[in-house]
Image (cartoon, rainbow, N blue to C red):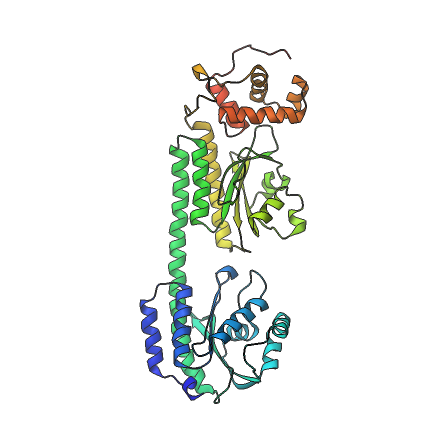
Length: 444
């Protein structure tokens, strides 16, 4: 494998030049390095970029001479790893942790498989490689930047045409370190860009709360910002009603089947408890965690694997929940979680402010009669008055001699007719716009 041993300075120069002109993107960098090496030296080339956040770790495999082996290695590594974990394997991890290259000209293939993981052995037994392999030549070096290993770069010679020695590690190390510098630049660029994007999300939420003429529009803008810019495939906002422990879906984005806005859901005690009012990550596959969630089946149909719940608190009160969903297993890092908590605080203040101050006058002929009063029948007006008084559905049920479920249905219809976002919003509007005639009481 003389061609694979020492490609020379020309390869380093080619890679360096391509990286200097490449986009500051981890995938682009790994692809550039492995493809150039694959064209210059026989073997299957693997480049791994690690990250404290496993979801952002990346791996690239290239083999110009034997693309079938490259595809096999990709599938092999994917099968050997835990879902949501860093896409790595035992030998590369050893190099990253120790900072010491692995150089070997003749490793029995069975020994290589056994050194990776039990899952790798199981996959290999069921899925043999496309070519018969007895022994492998290995060359793996760390990618180093800032005094730390940020990944690994290596080559598998399935035919060990000639011996691999320490000299091979020297030239490959120079290329790996150049790639590591490019990776660090890409990460710094990505971090700065993410920070700017997140600041933009917060600014847009503040503006929406301050200037939106429609509370529903403000809520919809929040979930759209979350799904279009932040790390979420879908998002919704659930608000709690006055004197009501239940939550109501007020806005949503990113769902394949849109949730029915206004749908009532039970509130989880831990979310409303100030002592536990922190970001919570749930995995839909966790039966114990999701056992009490009435929407678990819906989440499964949507393909969600991770749910992030952000309690919304304003003026010391629990007002709702901002939920973010991912269709992959996501473990957000501490920095992201801290930002999400800040986002939840700003969103809660914005929502509270919008409920209290958003101008109305947007009612349709369907929902509002002349004079600005809602077009409600006598029973609905009676229930509205009791909602304004702060009575719960159970208390209203006893006064109007209807079942609690019937009262819930009437309240839902009143919210729909008046286009109020929840009971708090309904009571505020009824008082501010003088929907209730003083001293008027229905006899039922």
